[in-house]
Every structure is written in structure tokens, then in C-alpha cells.
Length: 254
Image 1 (cartoon, rainbow, N blue to C red):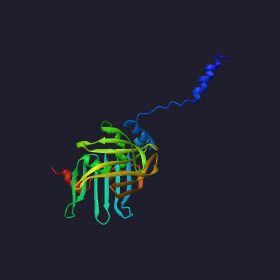
Image 2 (cartoon, helix red, strand yellow):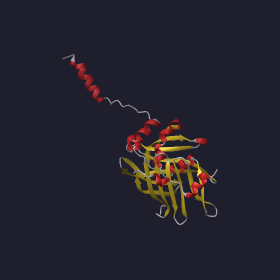
Image 3 (cartoon, rainbow, N blue to C red):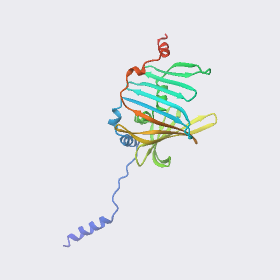
Image 4 (cartoon, one colour):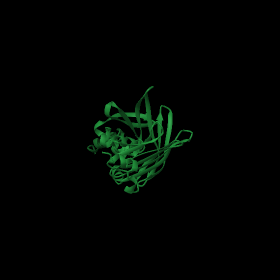
């Protein structure tokens, strides 16, 4: 019996001790991995060969200002159509090799130009924030963990993405859901630096993925809201990405 007493005493004392907790060191790799898993997982993302988005950008009073159509397909194919309500329409696209853009000049005449892939990618990511998010793992070499911060009234992990020419982005991820919460950048203007926050809201299922359907752009209190009413991942015919006649002429120029 006396041999059992030390064992019983140890068991009683151990029962009053706080359980051992393991502190997980947060890293960009871990945060991005959890974020990918939270929206459906790597395999679900890898199945996406095409993506179509349609939505309307509105002011806080619900007045529409821009209608957006964006289609992307495997091989870098893109077609984007921006309809500025009451003003006109611009377009940009790529057949996977050559990218182009249609805008207006000072006389409100349509102009067609060839653009580089970096410019095209920026245009796509300004609309398709899923691409912005899924491209972050490719930038792990320039991403740093920066602790936690309250972003849009939620406790988030913060990552800093160091871009070219000293520019930085801050990406925020919910500590509760692990989903991407939004992005913050500092933009230079004639009146000084301006903070631009982008918030991801209204998460809904699209096939195997959980995707945000509302993007809020907050430029120091000036709000614009993009609501996506259609997101599909069905295959897209290559004929959609054929060059307009004006672009064909540019490509054929010596």
C-alpha cells in the first residue's frame, strides 16, 4: 500500500496542473496553407481551368458605376469587359501569348494597343481577387509574417508582401476562419499617400470552393462596392479569346 501512495499523490497533483500547450509559430507558409484549406483545398483549386465573373460596382447609395465581365481560361487566356455606366466600354484580353487593351483617347475615340503580361496580370487581379490570393504562394520569398492586427473589426494574422521598387502590400487572414480577410496598400497621389483597404465579404459555395462574392474598396472613407452575381468554373471555348480585328492589324504590323 505504501508503494501506491506516491503514485496516487503524483496522479492527484498532475490532475491540478495546467495542461501543456504547444505554441505554434506562425509563418507565411502555414498561414497561406490554412487559408487555401479554408476555401476548399489545393486539389479543388487545381481543378479550376476556367473562371467567369460578372458583377456591378456601386457607390454606397447603390448607384451603379461599372459593370464587369471577366473570363479567364487555362493557358493564360483572358477577356475582360468594363462597361462604365453612361460613358462607354473598355476591354482587354489575351489569347495566351499576346495581350491587348482597348481604351479611349482624349477625344473619346477608341484606341487599341498591345500590352505586356505584367500589365494584363494587374488588370485581372484588380477584378479577380481569387487569382491575387492564389498567386501569393509563388511570392513566398518576399513575404514576411508581421504578427496580428485588427482588420475590419476582426483579429487577423498579417503578412507583408514586398513588391518591386520598395512597394508593399499587407494581406490579412482571419484567426477564426483562416480565410483571407483583405488587403491594404499605400498609394501615392498628388495630395500625398493614401491608404487603400480591400475587404472580402459574403462567402458562398461555388462547386467545391468557398468564395467571396462582395469586394469593398475603401480609399480612406471613400467606398466602392463590387458585388459578384455570377461566378462559374465551366470550361470556356477558345473562340471567345480570338483577337478583335483591330488587334489583328496590330499583331500583323512589321
